[in-house]
Length: 192
Image 1 (cartoon, rainbow, N blue to C red):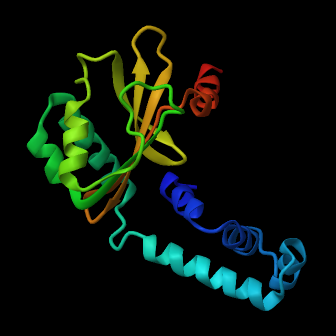
Image 2 (cartoon, rainbow, N blue to C red; image 1 turned 90 degrees about the vertical axis):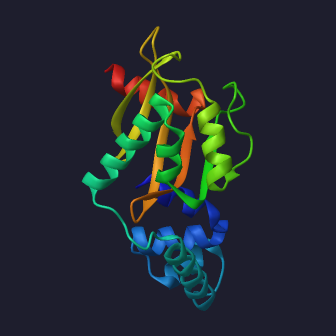
Image 3 (cartoon, one colour; image 1 turned 45 degrees about the vertical axis):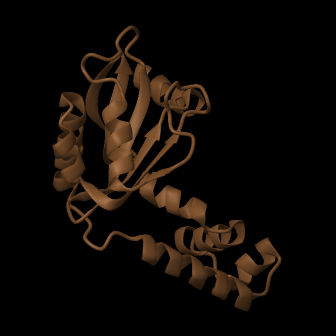
């Protein structure tokens, strides 16, 4: 599943998420789901309908091809790495959101989502420049989508994963994962 889809699923209520996942992904019927979540089948149909409507509202209007998305990630990386603020701003949607999870252990990470082109571009522009910073950047695949991977120059461990959600060739959301506990699996799987 894409990171964007997982983030949208988190926005559903626990019951909506359970009904949606059981029905859409595991093909349970509403009577079976009703027994699991202790609701009526009619209530489960309503919860599923609300969940689908929410997911539909969050779906990009103009989804990009995998090639176009990879190119957008590459352009983002070049703009950030070179300090090209104008190029970065041009890549961002007016209502772009930057969200990060550092587990409270990554200095300089945002603590709450940043919203808007100027706020996001200003924050990204204030971060240490690549390649001058302590990381090497590369593009890799995370959950089947291209992502910017920042590796520690000392031990080559992935310290930050940045995924972009795009719509019509612009970045709608930037998600940065820098929580070492959540990246442990990624580093372990790449070490094998």
